[in-house]
Amino acid sequence: MIALPWSDASDDQLDIKRSETILNRDHEGLESVKERILEYLAVRQMTNSLRGPILCLDGPPGVGKTSLARSIAESLGRTFVRISLGGVRDESEIRGHRRTYVGAMPGRIIQGMKKAGKVNPVFLLDEIDKMSNDFRGDPSAAMLEVLDPEQNSTFSDHYIEEPYDLSNVLFIATSNDLGSIPGPLRDRMEVISIPGYTEIEKQAIAKNHLIPKQLKEHGLTKSQVRINDEAIKNIVRYYTREAGVRGLEREIARICRRAAKQIVTGEKKSVTVSAKTLETLLGKKKHSYGQAEKKNQIGVATGLAYTTVGGDTLQIEVSLSPGKGKLILTGKLGDVMKESAQTALSYVRSKAEEFKIDPEFHEKSDIHIHVPEGAVPKDGPSAGVTIATALVSSLTKRPIRREVGMTGEITLRGRVLPIGGVKEKSLSAHRAGLTTIILPEANERDIEDIPESVRSELTFKLVSDAEEVLAIALEEASE
Image (cartoon, rainbow, N blue to C red; front, side, top):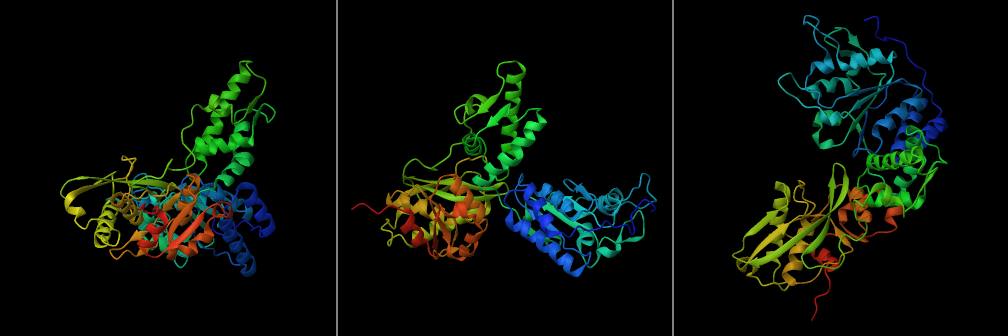
C-alpha cells in the first residue's frame, strides 16, 4: 500500500511545438495519428484536466505502435509503463488475487502503477486483442473497469482491497485485429487506425532511422558502410513485402553483418551498397515487383485483399471443363468467400443472354474457381466482383486487362456494395504495379485517406453495378 503512488503526479509538458518535434523526430508519416495526439495535448492545455481519452492504436505488425506510445510519454514528460496482454487468460492477472491465497499478488495494473511511481503515467496495454478466456475467468471483462473513464476512478484490486484512482492515467492500447476485441471493450476506446507505410515512407524510415540504428548496433560507422538510395528502394521492392518495417530492418541488419565480416577479415576497408552489389549481400530477389500479370489473360482477374498484415493482391482464376454444372472452389476459402462465389455465379447465370453467354452453360460445363497461394486462408465478401469478372471473361473468352485491380461485394442483382481497407488495398495495388483500381461508389470517401504520392499514380473508377466493372475490366469482344 505504501509503495503505491496515491497523489504524486509528474508535471505535464504541454508545449505543443516540442511534442510535435518529438513525434516527427521518431516517426515518419502517420500524420493523422500525430494530429490526434496533438489535439489531445491542446485540449489538455485548455481544460487543465488530467482526465484523458483511452486510445487504441490499431494496425499491422511493425508500423510503430509501441514506439509511438513511448514518444507520446516523452512528449508529455510522463513516466512510461508497458504491460503485454498477449496470452493473458486469467482474470486475476488484471484484478489481482485475494490475500487468502498462497502466493497472492496484485494484478498487472497495480504492479504497473507501483513501477511507474506516479499517478499519471502513460500506460501501454500491448496486444490487447490477444487476450483470451478460460475457466479462470475473462480478463477482457476485467479490463472494462480499467478502461471506462466513468468507473476507473475507483478501480478495485482484490489484493489491496482499496479503491484506486486510475482516472489520471493515459491508457494506450495496441492491437493488430480489432475484430477479435469484444464489443463492449472496443466501445470504451478511441480507435486510431495506423495503416501500412508507402514505399516512399519506407525509404525515408530506412534512411533516417533504421540504417543509423543498425550501424550503431553492429559497431560500424557511416564511412565504413554506405547504402545508396537506389539500393534502399530495391530492398523495399524486392526483399520485403509487408505493411510495417520489421522485415526491412532485418535485411539492413543482414547487410551490416556481411559488411562487418568483410571489414574484420581485411577483405575491404569500407562497403558501398548499390543496386548492383545488393544480390551479393542479400542473395537472389525474394519478391517480384511490377505488373501482377505479364499479359492480358482470359479467366484471370486481379482482386485486392485486406489482411492483418496489410493489403495484398489476389489472383482469381476460373477454368471451364466439360461436365454437368459442378462448381469447384479451391484455395482454402472461408465460408463468406464461398458464398460470394455462389452469388457471382448466380448473377452471371441471370444475365447470360445480356453477356452473350450460352444460357445452358451451367449444365454443360464444370466451373472451377481457384485462388492461388492455396495454403493461405482467405475469407470475406470483397472478392465478389473479381470472381464475377473472371467468370464472365472465361465464358465469353474476353481477356481481362492486366493493369486493373478490383474490389467490392456483389449482390444477386449485380449491385456493388462497399468494403473496408481501401487504403491498404490501394497501397498493395500500387506495389504490384497496377494503375487502375475499381472501387464501389460508396467508398469514394475513403480515397482521400490514400497518400498523395500513391493516389497520383492510380486511376480510381467508382462503380455501383457489376456491368460497369465488366465494361472497364474486359477487353472489347472481337467481331
